[in-house]
Image (cartoon, rainbow, N blue to C red; front, side, top):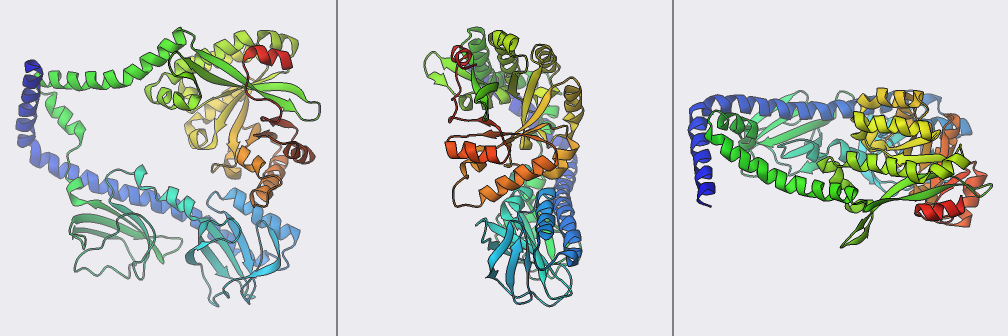
Amino acid sequence: MTNRIKNICVAWLISSLLFGSLAIFVYVQQKEAAKQSVQAASELIRQELDSQLHNIDVFLKHAERLDETCDAHTISLMREQVFINPALSEIGIVDEYGRLLCNSFGRLMPPVQTTEPIKQPGLRYHGPIITDFLQVPAFVLARTRSDGFEVNALLPTSWLSDTLDITRHRNLAFIALLDGESGVPIFLRGKYTLPLGETIFPMTDVLEFEGHFDDGTQKYIFARPLAALPQLTIMVSSDAKRLSTIQPVWLLTLLLLYCGSLVGLTMLLNHYDSRVLSSRALLLGAINKQELFNVYQPLVDATTREVVGVEVLIRWQHPVEGELSPAYFIPEAERDGSILDLSIYQIERALTELRAILQSKPHFKVSFNVNGYLLTCADYLEVLHKANQVIPKLTIELTERDVLSQAQIHSVLQSLVSSGVEIAIDDFGTGYSGLHYLQSFPIDLLKIDQTFVASIGMDNLQSPVLNAMIEMAAKLDKKLIAEGVETAHQAEYLSRQGVCVHQGWYYYKAMPIHKLKQVC
């Protein structure tokens, strides 16, 4: 204990002396870098918003071509725009008397009375409002046509929330989408506050300010109007004290100048290792003891009731806790890196257990769940290629958020497709893929999320979305699998819509290999 206290005192003394000698230099450099970081965060958000609003405005400018009778072609155009643009949830046509005639879900009978269109040109906004159809808050962009009709586009506040997510940026006090005339926040993340004794509205140009604010703190703000909609401004703020906070990397650099810092750094690293490696050691130990085992969720041809494939899932038979689902250990495995060992183990075990089935059914589909990290690991890709030689119908399932946002794995997916591996999107419809990702990535198969399947036969608005997804998949020549099929009505409805491969408890639950062999 005495040595530990001594090492802590030595590390503190050395870092204090070095920091004192270089404090002025570090302070200036750090503060400037922090300001640039705030500006970069503002520009990143502004560019993302501008890009989406510009695309929407281009569509609204050409809205004169939309037929006010809301014929099938008009509905199709609006629906296609919603699929193309991940920021949109709905497009609607309002007549000169303020009646909503139709939207991207279809024609409204009778029309819904709303607000009369403003008789002025140009792009405008209002909201947030609660949409009649999806019953979610939405931000509205609109243009009035030459005939007095209005075409509007609804951006769900959930999309704005993701775009203005303050957790994606370090050291920010707030992010605000403001009305540039009044300064009223339209959308806000964090605690909004304004400079004392300064008039900054109306805002027409870039603003950069550091000083005292009306909440009693000192802050730095950076603001710039949107190019696509100058009435709106993005303002980003950081506490001034955070601008001058020295980053740990600087402290670590100073500590490394003296040999005594090695003791303190070693202690920190040992503490880190004791926390991270303990969970890794437990999971690797479970792999060595073969406490982890595969279960198989059958894929069923609804027409013949034949099991045509499986999704391979993993469980942990814990000696104390009993059987654990992946939710209890996969997130930790992804954090500590043992997901690589676990995934390789899962594939190798599946190859052994499925050998007899694959010999009798050469076209049997076998599907594994994969995240973006695994697709960057050479060891995993090597095992995947070996599995592809044994499993002619090998499929990997990716999620929209985890993988499709990583453009650098595009070449990896292309290589896998070239070798015969099928690429599937899991939980389709819950992310932000849209037509762009479906057309730019080598995707063969879409798995309809169970929330949309559950909507079949219920009086809600997900069923029309399900039908639109099926229609879009057919146009793009993508195969479909329905997840979470639990009733005969759901199975019959999906089959009528042309979705014939199902997965769910209506047919089978996930099962161990000996039960799978009985049903195959």
